[in-house]
Length: 444
Image (cartoon, rainbow, N blue to C red; front, side, top):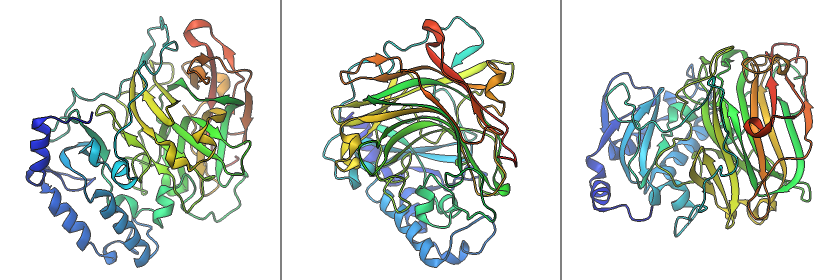
């Protein structure tokens, strides 16, 4: 990954001559030079955003903070091409010039674990109604004929734009996994507008993995529904005052549309916090701030999936996992290592040693008493092909072996709206699994 090759180096030197769509919401194949994009960003004015419909940026000072962040993230980045997917632009950025490498001061890219991410946990699927989805889109082209993949030695980086970030009041809110709009009425779930239907277990672990059922639950943003998530958490907290996490899954409500629309597609994400979700950071989603170091050119964080499950139809899933290897939290999708959180981002905290808690399931966020679907939108009791599931749940021990989790605890903050079953043993095909989800609504 460190030797990009003669062709790639030549492309990097000629980066100013390469072009791509200029906005995350392009309607034609109009392109601009990367240096022109940077100049336009430097010339952007707050008056085009503050107070305008579709944007929430608080004031001119908040706008300038957003603009400065985007400029800082791109300064020094070498982009060799771009493509559009579901209204988002992905820039193929050289591994060594990605923001996390430059801004964290890393001198080299770590080597991934030498074995398959899901070795020993691969499903032996015999049911033709279950299909594992790949995030590899190398055979697809966007509306303008651009191949939806990046060359080896580069990574697909979802473009940061003012149009996207300015839909939040501040840059800190853009980074957060919390509400960006104050609630006008008291919210029922006590956890700052979040609701959960999850299974958890306190157990020392060095990561884990599972297969997550893919759905796209509608999230009505104008009603105050903010996101719906299915994910796994690896948490260090029990012996320290500050919770730290490495998280991954799919989210609907953050990517692909503006805050004025109902979102319709879920996207892959990773998230981290080193300091109990402090609203002042650090910590953020995907590659939106320095933190996650991407290694693979195959998978685009923030990208939608090629297929989603339907009620009583084919069920689609994706295998995700983390492994704390040589001091770094390596993230995997299916059979590929995608990248890692350097241990240094946890600043000597618990996750530099190991995690102490595993969690799997659904999470929603609302800023008013209107809650989105979770999972498929059906309650856990409706079962296979109706409710969403997590299966083949494992955690890793100190030497990296997979272990079935001991009996996990069910947490349902709003059982009138969202439920989860207890864990079930499904033999070699399903191992440890459970169902979860619900319709949300106004009585949560």
